[in-house]
Amino acid sequence: MARENINDIAVFIAVARERSFTRAAAKLGLTQSALSHIVRSLEARLGVRLLSRTTRSVSPTEAGERLLQNVGPRLEEIEAELAVISELSETPAGNIRITAIDSVIDTVLWPRLAPILPKYPDLHIEFNADYRMLDIAADRFDIGVRYGDQVEKDMIAVRLTPDVQTMIVGSPGYFEWHTKPTTAQDLLRHNCITLRLASSGGIYAWELEKDGKPVDLRVHGQAVFSNGYHMANAAVSGCGLAFLTEDLAAPYLADGRLVSVMPDWCPKFPGLHAYYPSRRHSSRALGLIIDTIRHAGV
Image 1 (cartoon, rainbow, N blue to C red):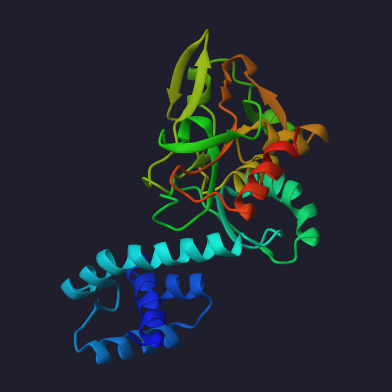
Image 2 (cartoon, rainbow, N blue to C red):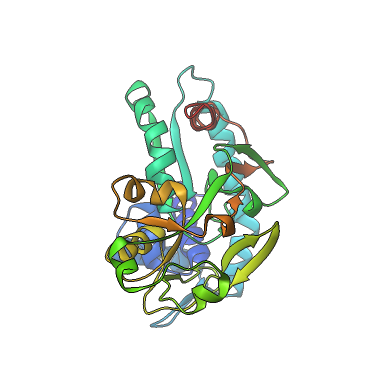
C-alpha cells in the first residue's frame, strides 16, 4: 500500500472514532479543511464512500466501518511496536495523554509533573480536563485519574492521594441571612449550588453520610455548574451552599471566604488513583509519569 494511503487511513480513523471533523482536527493538530480533503482523496483512490456527512453529524458507511474495525487495530499495533522501539533509547520520550478533572490537574498532577519536564525535553504531556468517565483505551488516553471507586476493575491502578474529605460550605455573607443547616431536611430549604453530570446530563445528588449510613440528597438551588471551580466561586460570592472536596475548598476556608457546616454529614471519598489498561505497553515514558505522580506527593 502506498505510504500516503496509510497516513490518510490514520486520519480517517480519527474522524470516524470522533464522529466529528472538529474534534479529530483538534486531536491531530490539523485544520478541518485539511482533514476533509484527506478523507475525500482517500475515498477517491479507494473508489468507495467511507463517511456519511450531514450538517450535524459524521458517521462511517458500511465500507468505512469495515476499514475502522479491521485496519484500525492493526495501525495501533504498528504504533505500539514503534513505541517499543523508541523505548530502546535510555531517555524517556514520546507523548503521554492524561485525562482528569480540572481541579485534579491543577492541584495534583501539574505540581508533580511540571518539575520533570525540563529534564526530559523529548517527553510531551497532554492534559484533558473532563468530568465524564471516559473509556481511556477507546479514546486513546494513556492514563486516567479518578477517585478509587470510579476506576474499572480491569485497569491497573495506583493510589495518588489519601482518601479525600468532602465538605458543605457557604460564605459568611450567606449565613448572615440564612441559618446554618444541621440536618438533611435543613439543606432542602437552602439555596444549594448544584453540579450537572457530564456523563448523564442529570444533577448530582450530594453523597452524604450520617452515623455510617449513606444519604444521597437531591438538593436544589438557583445556580447549576459543570465543574467544581465555578461552584466554589459561586459559594464565595454568597450564592448558596456547595458540596466540595476539601482540597478544592481549602484556600477559601483558610482566608475565611468560606466556612464549613455539617461536618458529621460529610464522608471521605476514596483517594485519587491513576489507572491505565492492563494490556497497555508500559513504556519508559509511561513508567516515569506514573512513578512521578505516585511518589511526588509522598
